[in-house]
Length: 382
Image (cartoon, rainbow, N blue to C red; front, side, top):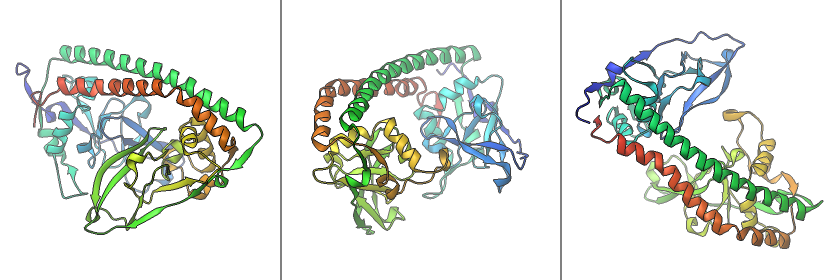
């Protein structure tokens, strides 16, 4: 790669400074950027008259980054559907020089080495670290010819398409399994409708935070992705006065994102770890509900639709899911012995599901690994 010339980002990117002139009654998309190269998306629409501070306009195929979270991979290309969206000054955007292909840059910024470059261009104290735009633009990369960039993009696009097709195939198989669960759920429930609060209850093991304490954290993925362990926090690293301690078979609900599937049953391996007060925990009432059964049910879009109906608002502006809203949901529900029968039927699919999980994990790791090999630190000057 040394045969490719070293070029500073300042030679390749030109700051866009299109000030937004907002109509009072018109709605505009606001932009947010997912961490770790997960894309540039809309965080919802806002009426021009409700915008209190100045905004900038972003255009399709511009590079956009978060000053606060670029060091965590919050950088990407503005998609066509967000052309004309608005952002605050914390989200600078850039036009590309002719010798830089925007799709090539879109792949490059998703790589771990480029995130390291953003970290090198950031400074500040804890919770106030921001990328410094001038320092960012002085960072250098080895730039292949435009033709070579387009060849690299074509190959990465082909790989992404293969990854996407494998995911779609796995999704289709999972949808069949989910359809079986919902079919059995309604068949066994028949005309029996319960209030969720009749079979589960709010139960929280709150622990006061001590400065010298260590609190291993747990997060909840959206869309039925389950719970995952996170690094521990010390008492001095949080502003929370208390954490909720998890216990085996607890139903854990994210109040912020529960309506999009951020809820799950706690496995024994994560018991005694902690979640913030934004995560509420519930337990099944004895002889009325099976944690294993509810764990399967709450992973379905059908259940998420019940949560969505229980809360108000749209998209990013949907209100938090309060415990009483979850508990007041009415839904068909089989008796406990029938729940256990369904769990037994579903258990026969577990081996297949475990194999699918491994395939999906390997598939998802393919693109990041490819980007890291392609855009190694030799490609970037940090």
